[in-house]
Amino acid sequence: MILNTISIKDFSVKAYELWGIQWLLLTAGDFNKGDFNTMTVGWGGFGAMWNMPIALVASRPSRYTTEFMERYQDFTLTAFPNKYHSALSLLGTKSGRDGDKISEAGLTPIASEKITSPGFAEADLIVECKTIYKQDLDPAAFIDPSIEKMYGGYNYHRMYYGEVILVRGTEKYSA
Image (tube, rainbow, N blue to C red; front, side, top):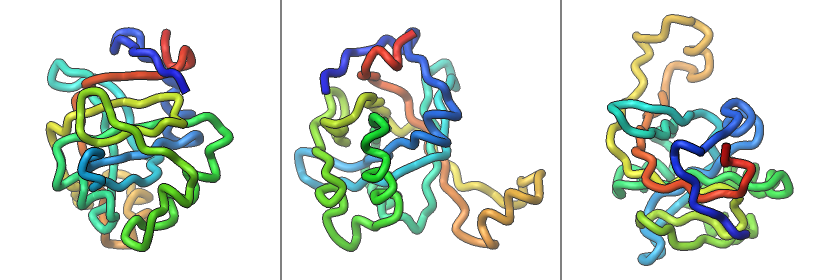
């Protein structure tokens, strides 16, 4: 798929639709070394913090991808046309610890332009991010008690803030 560079000022998404319904792939590692992993994410957002464009993504410490988030200083978030929804479902339920789930999903990793973590040839959006902050969720800070029910008392998400370095996508993501 041909993607065009999108200025951060022109980057536009329907946030809930993208994160909550369409989903994204979170990928971290080093494409050139062949040392990376990906997983489907549905919790996160885009915005501004510390006078920077930011991507915020959640990953549980038990997830294999979190190991790559900890080892490497960048990540990509990629979105896909609807026909890839079953591939994203597979990538969200299988672990990269157990085999080559990316090949099984039928996706093609490609080098990013500015960072080491790869994107995917089939994506219609690739957001390249440099990790700048991380924080584990503290259950003592949950104000709404229904949040705790999503965790069963353990494996709380780690939140990663990434400075958006480059956005490439189709016209769908450009204002």
